[in-house]
Length: 223
Image (cartoon, rainbow, N blue to C red; front, top):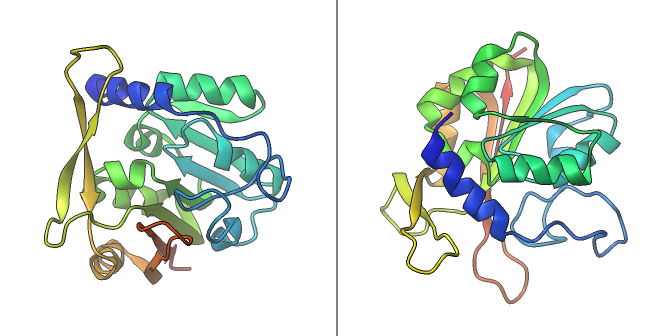
């Protein structure tokens, strides 16, 4: 366990409000790839999930994972933050949520997943050179890997960057984690070099009145 990273994500998770009881359509669970509520595509990006093992890397407090379970998926989530895992267990006690890094979980397992997803999660905050081979090895042939996060914040600043988490205590030193920023075309190349096919990478435009879109990347393990 990367203790400093876990502490940083605990700070972030403790400051985050829980997911609303219902969305704009009145649904109790839903899947949201973007940072904007009730905006963007849904879980269909991952294919037909009924009876399929699905893994959420960096599942946070479990909102997206809970929706995958309602679609008939055998859903498992992993997150490095004890605070986030506790939130998930409290709201959705039926969910299979593990407190582990994505790399630890993937390296230790033996069974295959029909889909792996990450929404502003471990796919953004783990070196792709380490994570992608592990994901590819655990995907079933024809399985989908999809993840989303912010597009690069600054033109020309690509690769590992620093994200700051500020503890609420007055005078507390900020905590930092690494994220990996790439443009859509570069993500496409990286996934293809890791053995994925049918790779797409696009920026979903933000809703009216907002300025930041969402980068959504998808690839398939060859059959």
